[in-house]
Length: 87
Image (cartoon, rainbow, N blue to C red):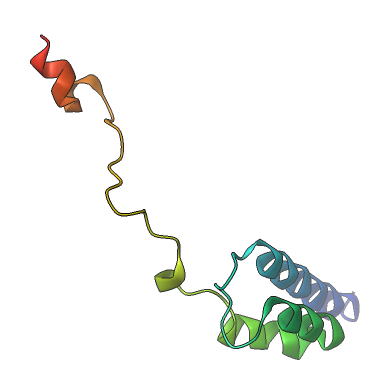
């Protein structure tokens, strides 16, 4: 069991990083392009995965922002000004 646990941890970390890389939007990954991170994580699983988590993951600042002029819809009838005017 002791020899299986480290292998499972590295495998889980590698799969997590691969899924994260594939799901990241265009231009969100830092330091390397998507293909570079995929190659690094697959060829050198432990160091590539740790390197991706430290230097490659998208930051909160690179998260998609709402487009200018976007206004979310009302949450309930009492928040909708047009609805309240019509009462």
